[in-house]
Structure formats: C-alpha cells, structure tokens
Amino acid sequence: MKKYGLSLIILLAILACGFKSTEVKKVEKTVTMETTKIQDSVLRHVVLFKFKDGTSPENIKKVVDAFSALPSKIPQIVGYEWGVNNSPEGLNKGLTHGFLLTFNSEADRDIYLPHPDHKAFGEILGPHLDDVTVLDYWSKTN
Image (cartoon, rainbow, N blue to C red; front, side, top):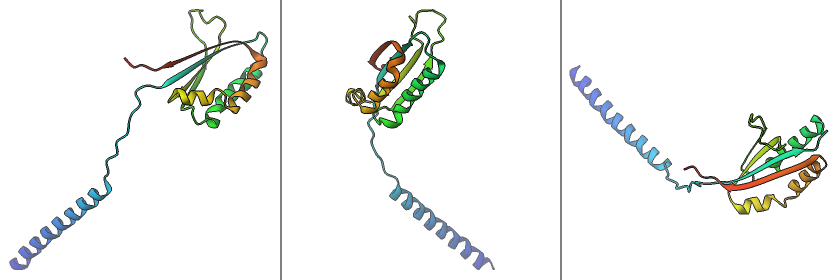
C-alpha cells in the first residue's frame, strides 16, 4: 500500500509540474507588449453664446440639441461638454451657454470648422445668436 501511495504522490507531482509549465507556455504565447504614444496635450475649442433677447427656451434647446449632435457626426471631435452659466461674479457679459470641444490636433479642428454639419448647425444658431466668443488653446497640466 505504501508503494502505491508514494508512487501516486510522485505521479501527481509530475502531472502538476507538467500542467503548470503548459499554462505558463499558453500565457507566454498570448501576452504581447504594445507601445502606445500618449498625447500629453489636447486642443480645446471653447465657444460661448449670448442669445438674442426674447429667444424662447424652445429655440435655445434646438440650438443646444443641434450642437450636441455634432460629435456623433464629426469624428474629429473627441470630447464635448456644455453648460449654462451660473457664476455669481456677474462677469459673463451676457454670455449664457458654454461649450467645450476637444480635438487631438489643429488639423482635426480645421476639418471641423468648414464641415457641412458644422455649417448646418450655424444655420440653426444664426437667427438666435446675439454674440459669440471663441477661444482655442492647447491644454497644459502644470
């Protein structure tokens, strides 16, 4: 009985080592290293609107909805957010709505500006716009 017990333990140890090395080989075959260049800065496109006096909330919503649809139509827009001014400082000069678009390059922004969908948005915005301010900058984290 002891002979078979010792043989069984040795056999199990050999099998365990065999399975373990097989698993390692499988992992070695599936693991690949890929180098990816991480961009440390992005191009921000800030747009601020002042709507004409008397512009209805429904028309403002149409403008916001049309602007918000642009990222799904123009792939060069890699980030988008918007909001309504709530600063207590009173320095907004009538500008009430802010939009922040992100691009990976100036070339991407330059594709966006004359893009037909951007131009179509301008047609929706135009009748309601009193003033606009635009500022583009490369982001910095330091």
